[in-house]
Image 1 (cartoon, rainbow, N blue to C red):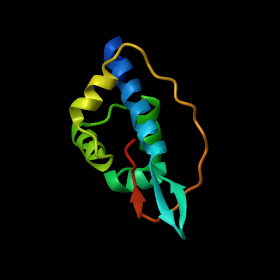
Image 2: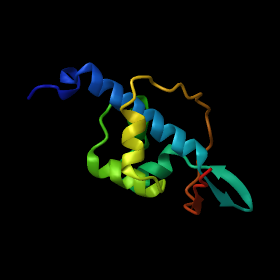
Image 3: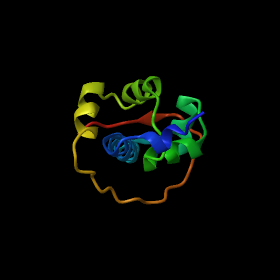
Amino acid sequence: MKNLKNNLSEEDTLINKNLGLWLRQERKKCYFLKDGKKKPITQTMIAKKLGVTFQQIQKYEKGDNTIPIFRWFALCDYFKVKPNEVKELVTQKAVINITETKQGDSNDNNDICPKE
């Protein structure tokens, strides 16, 4: 079996990177309340919602792995974003630079994703 990752076009690779950056950006905008305090949504929390490991979410966010379409729709539903809006963002030629920060983890699923 051929390794699909090595057969991706430059455009497909860019789309994976953009989609990963979109995922990271959306995750970092969201939070949940625990003991009256805002806590960030973590990769582990997203992973549990999708039924994958947090390592898989890391690979999605880096653009190393392609997000399957059914998981992409689940992410759009989770973040309350229309798939067409995401499509327009991730098919742009320029990759947006998003600053990475390390956050803690929690298993509380009382999540809120504010839209600005």
